[in-house]
Image (cartoon, rainbow, N blue to C red; front, side, top):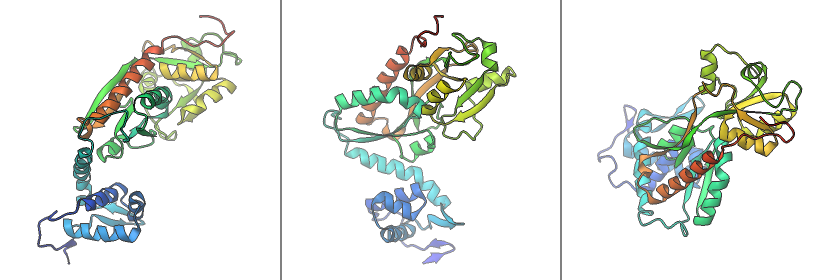
Length: 333
């Protein structure tokens, strides 16, 4: 019976609570929507609705309420998200508590890698995993996700990106050496040549990569901060949120793009473009790639194995991005 907006109860919370109810609760807390939670669980909507009614009685709170046309978690529901994720993560690890055997493991790991990072690392990562752990599976998501929230809620296992995710429940590890900046362009376009100095760079048209997936949102990185500090304006006719568009645009349009050196050299090699050290490279702070995970995964042997593989691949890829890429016939410099 509801009393002052809550369900009346005589028993203590969680008395006799079935662990399967916690699995449904996790889905409801993640989705804040009964229909989507049912789809995630592979159950019918009426079944999940009945479970939600049981959970409301158990916790003495509605947990999920209507807010306009959508549903929203109550404050109690919000407060349960991290504890439920941690509890179920600990239970999930019971099945992985023995020694991790890569050759026979069938585990599934979910990672967030922006495509600017994934393009560099994923080929080597997959080669390594396929050789050492042929039955292990990876699911890779892009940077349009909310990285910190997804880690806290157990949606993903590892985030590999440049932004530092600060939270007391997170562990992190730097990957490779800090990455300097380079430019890429097609030197055969009118007005361009075999080299480009700082003044030419400022006057050029620019393609800007916005890897967070929202080119309509104003973002800041170390390059933008330097330009602001020096009161340097540049013409940016195109902002794009995915790396795959950069090369084809630069091949056909007289523009220049600035990005971390390993990425610039990867795109240049793939598209037949030219990659050179950035004309402002001496004043642009380098970019440090890092890997972040939640404390519930820290001691897991399988998780640690995958972290070690990612670190080894990143160290190799970043170290090997050592030489400028020149377009044949464009000259030597």
